[in-house]
Image (cartoon, rainbow, N blue to C red; front, top):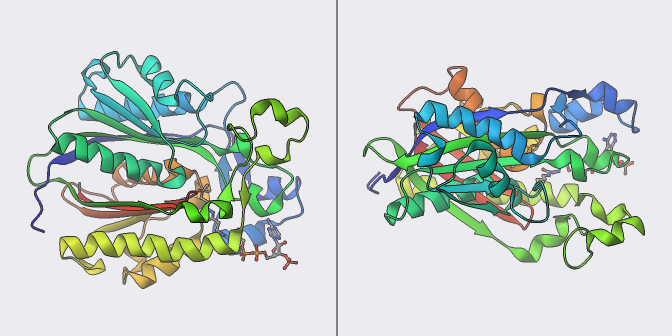
Length: 329
Ligand code: ACO
């Protein structure tokens, strides 16, 4: 591990809506069953946002917990990077709404659109900003209300997703702890496998009244599954090789929480034993950009991660985008 460590995580937080939607409740809405969802995905329940809340509301709760732990006042933040594909509005960014909610009056704020890889893209960009000497105190968030763009009549997708937010504060490292390796990549040729066609400049919101169908998540599940295993694996191998470590050196692997079978296939490929793989998708479903920071904060607060532990994260998402970040907590 020869690379200089420049940025470390000094606080984490997460927030999920109170309302829980179980598999059994879903089975009353579409032609599915608790058994099908559990065996094909590992998901048991997910949290669904209140109607009057936006993505930045949950992001703000997660941010406050992370700032408190980092012992940092909101005014001290230099930059806010918020990974989301479900912002409060088309514009301004959800990051600007969040900035206003937490009072981070001295920060620059922007959203990162990298779907489920959004949080790891944010960590990677924040590390670069700290390495460049440009900023010192950066808030990185993944927050998503996928329930707002879910087609609740499509059993192939509506059973998969949930809402939530997770956050981390990144600051200059003490030289021992922090980001050891990071990798981000994308391939726009694969955009058709996972997208929401409506709502952008090609099919603007005004068209939703004519045909609401394109204003929901569209996914080729099997193809996404296949690419997810390959690409998440590739990014994780890349950062582990660069750091000169193997799966056995890790204390915990936190993969994007999309499907238990994807997670198991990757862990096997990386030679990481089950007991070192963090799984919480049974409780939250796939919360896209929020899944890794929710898991990270949960694992820290429940004692699965201890100070000094070596943590590997990996994600993939629409775009396609994929990413892996290795750090010492
Ligand atoms: N309940 C019951 N049956 C269902 C359901 C359901 N909820 N959904 C699909 N089926 C049926 C299908 O209609 C099909 O029936 P048929 O054989 O009669 O045609 C059968 O189950 C098998 O369908 P598949 O799609 O082949 O099932 P598969 O085993 O591939 O599992 C799944 C589907 C869970 C979606 C899987 O492909 C998967 O997890 N893919 C990856 C999805 C993912 O990770 N997405 C991440 C998105 S990340 C982001 O950027 C937002």
